[in-house]
Amino acid sequence: MIVVVEGPTAAGKTTWCRRHVGRFVAGYARTGKEPADGPALARHWARVAMRRWAEAEELERLDGVAFCDTDPIRLHYAWGMAALGLAPRAQFDRELAVVRVAMQTGRLGFADAVLVGLPDVATLQRRRDEDPTRRRRNFATHVQLREPLRQWYATLDALDPGRVHWDLPTDGTPKLPEPRPERSSVALLDALVEALPPLRTAVPE
Figure 1 (cartoon, rainbow, N blue to C red):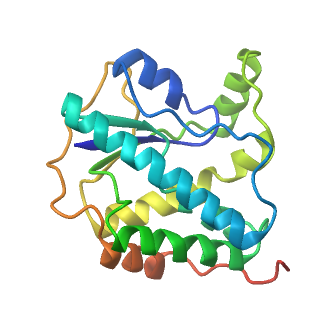
Figure 2 (spheres, rainbow, N blue to C red):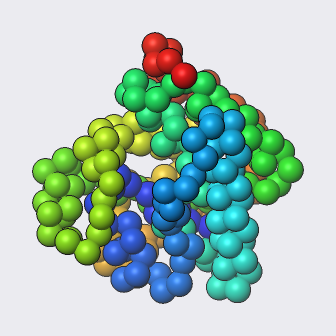
């Protein structure tokens, strides 16, 4: 079983993982040295995703259940930025293409379960202010991504009911669904992208 813990910035993902699951696949920390070129950046995120997915598979082998602090597949971020008109549609298309290849070769997949925490904006802001130890870059932009993130996982849940749990329970891990028989499902990826609201195309490269 592989479980993803998701939510907007300051939703409490890392805190929840540390409190309830012990070891887990940590979220990616930006270095500031990520490629600026669009195709190179798409390949970079695919490499990050595949590395984190491999870590999850190894934890699953050792512990039976592996938890990931944020989804190794970060397509919801690229889709959300395009949906908000903050990034070009072309960048999402690039990232989608490399993720699709990674799925076809079995090096990336959908988690068996996703726990999504969606605190309201006031709560996110309060948590940000109460945690001086964390630098939350571009906080305002990440708060805007709350709604696209909800749309992404609501669409996934509609296509494959039971996969998404809409809470980060304070008393620990909720009852999880059965493991999915096919994680690297290109058909599910294609259906998800097709079912999402149309993206804007006005943002130039």
